[in-house]
Image (cartoon, rainbow, N blue to C red; front, top):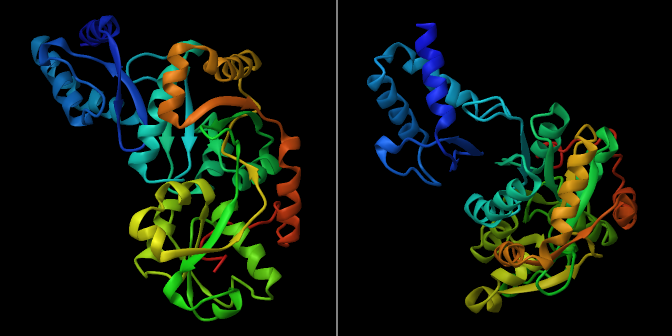
Length: 354
């Protein structure tokens, strides 16, 4: 039986590898020519069947359950399903819907893998705080951090910023809009007592902190005087106000601007715009090999001069990546202090910020 297992692993190791999408993670697994091509988006069950077919061919059905379990576990650990190669997992916050985020980041992940020379995967996370938790636990070695969650994570575990995108309009920062429907009759936070505001996440600068400060300037406590509807993403917050699920909303300026057109544009009006902060930055664990950190930085900052990189950048919605350091967040640290938030003890639970 042991010899049969070794033979099977050898067969897998000789097969070409491709990416598939699981629920939260891009994963590298062997292909099985007997079932034809299995491409991106192939369900895990298809790979289970492929494994079972190989097992039947080798008269090794006894290993089916064990190997299926190995495939499932590979979604949890930063390893390839067949082999022991380390993999850099990059966490993603739900800035936009799952589909939009995966479609945007997948080409970049593949490009990084090829240029850096190591396996790279991505993990779509359910909320902003999950990126801090995954990084702290070591389940992700890097992440595209929104500015607020970057500041909190760095305060706790000393992550290192690498680079952030420069959008197609040449801007590398974002601000937070606070908006209402034109027909709501709401002119300021003072009109919001007892009403509902749609926000993104307690660790979002442009979809929570910006609105908290706007309300504070108007003498209104956003956590006590209004009801918060946590939309989960910027696009969802915009649509919640448009669809009258909430009376007011907060979202990132360029996501709002991209969404607002036609009937939505006619229905909404912006009441406030926050100071600009750095856009989402790729930051890495301090424990990551310094040579890999430097390689990632070199690859990202050179993309604009590489024809293939230019294509990937366009799909990402950027013209380049620029080097970023903690000094770029000086203004945001001031905003956090102004809001009365102590990063060392901040409770980012959605229940605690109501």
